[in-house]
Amino acid sequence: MPKPESPWSKGNVALLATLEEIGLPERMVTAMNRDGIRLVGELVQLRQSEILRKRGLGVKSLQLAKEILRGLGLSSGMALKGWNSDRASEARGKMGRELRKVLFGLVKAEWSEHESLESELRSLLLEASDERNAEMLTLFFGFNEVGPQTLECTGQRYGLTRERVRQIAARAESRIASIWRPTEHLFAARDLLNSGLARPFSASEFAAAAKESGITESAIHVDGVIRALNLVGEPCTVERFRVSGKTLYGGRPNRSVLEAMLRQARKDTSARGCSDVGRLIRLAGQDDDDLDSVRRQLSKFDEIKWLDDEKTWLMSMAVSRNRLVNATERIFSVIPSLEMEKLHASLQRPRRILIVPPEPVLAAFLEANGIAKVTDGVANALPGVPDKDLGLNDTAFVKALRELGSPVIREKLEEYCVERLGVNVRSFYVNLSYSPLVVKVAPGVFSLLGEKLDPECVERLASQVRNARRRNSG
Image 1 (cartoon, helix red, strand yellow):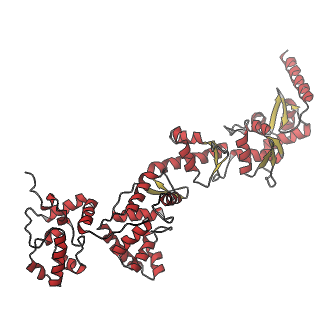
Image 2: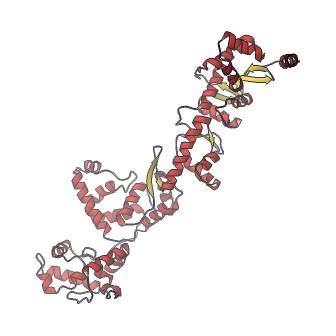
Image 3: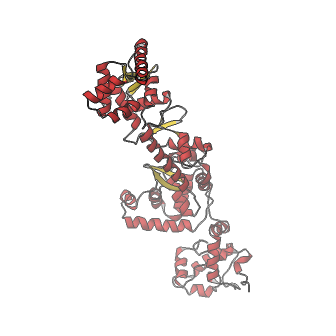
């Protein structure tokens, strides 16, 4: 069988209101609650004589209650067919904030238009507390440029204990949650948070957008706005999270993508020296259409250094080990001045540096890491570039090429390094192919990077190598 029709189903939802919500004085609310009478529907079923018998109530209280009920189209001693307190509480839960919105219109609560969110929030606090407490709660709830404060911090500021601050705040929260007011600026802030900003966003970005759109007059903190929305029961889809020490606002997918891109940027910086943003997007599983958004999000982090104006190449300054830094520092500790074209070609030899960036990006990389200054296509080592430990093999090549002179044929270089300097023959051939300090200028002919060579000398040595190979093959 269907449930019998409820007294409030015909439109008089005021029966579902609590006694506080219709504005009855606290003394009368306390007296009624003492006997389990909490809702208006329960109160109107009492006769006047029953109300007067309540402890602490008199004719004056009764008269005030009658005036308030009359304004709602109700009176005492009503017979409510089908009234059930449990079903009434259930109906209140289903209506939620919509009930308080309807009651706002029924009780004709005073609420003037406000010019800013700050003014609205202060008015809410004044409905829930006195002037002094409203000032204290503004600090505690964070309705300012700083954001919410702790109980202890707030108490110290106003000479109150933590417990006293908690009590005042709890009472204000309960009062604010029980009313509905047309806080248009707060609703606009909710919409801005939920869908008006590209996610994730920072507190400063929200403050600037809220001020620009006329919602706020000052740079009110986003945490304070979120706290206000929670107090009035308005939904907010924004979550607060931290990535690489920076507080941002958005959703879990935003956080996961950012964390993935920062991890890859650090990994690429360590292994390659730098990375291009397109690679990060692909590895993070994002679409190329997100390129501008990714650039904007990565730019939030101080560790990200862009190496070109187009923001295509980047590096993470948070990485302690960087193979491209190590390779270039080794080169400039031996050759203090070098043409960028030769440097770029030389860096393509080490097998650990898989991708060498374009020359303009490489130039920005050198300057960003304090290694060299590039002018007119020539990189000059900056003062203070440390002498790198070249290791046994590179040290042997440098010593051999300086002693023997550049260029030199491979047989003489091998003899010097292996026989005189004790380099392992297998290591010799591996490093001959990959060392960035050694340049292959012709088949079987090698030189130290950056040295000026006589073309005739190179051709003469190359001819010697070709003749030797013919004799050996014959």
